[in-house]
Length: 210
Ligand code: CO
Image 1 (tube, rainbow, N blue to C red):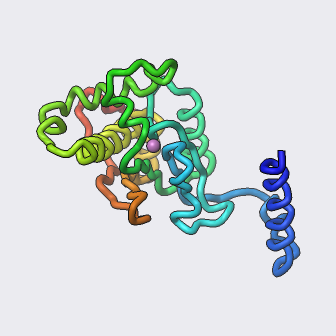
Image 2 (cartoon, rainbow, N blue to C red):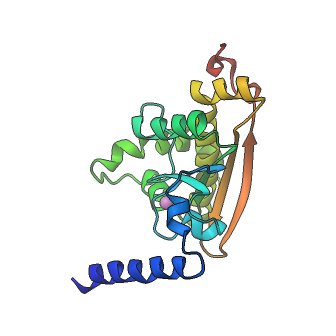
């Protein structure tokens, strides 16, 4: 029980600290949000978007799930993306994976783990598509880490393939820009591996006209 009480006590200390130098900190914050970024990241507790980008409350709209997937039937994610793009008008969307991701590792294995089997099935498809390249890598951890990168690229393309993003690109000259990053838990550094701002980067079967 004390571990949960600790959180509430920490919250009390934090809120007092915020108002100490700026008495209107929370009343200003309560007026509304205008974040520039939408972050789509892994649920992994070590990959904290505001901590690792040093962004403050109000600066980043956030969606997290296991292995940072963009699944075109996921109403939760699509609702977040539509709100971020059409109401908040974010200029940048970051899909951030991380090396040594448990979700990606699980997708490379054959064990049945329950409901998550169906979620990470999306990564299994990416693995099977790039099987030749990934299986050609010697070290197990390098294999996982390459699939982490391929997964991020696939998710950025999934995002680019939504009508929400393509409609925005049409109206806002290539914004929001879509970025694929990979975070390295060993160094604390993010690496940018892909940026897409146009449906020309997609197969014509995935392009919409408006
Ligand atoms: Co992960």
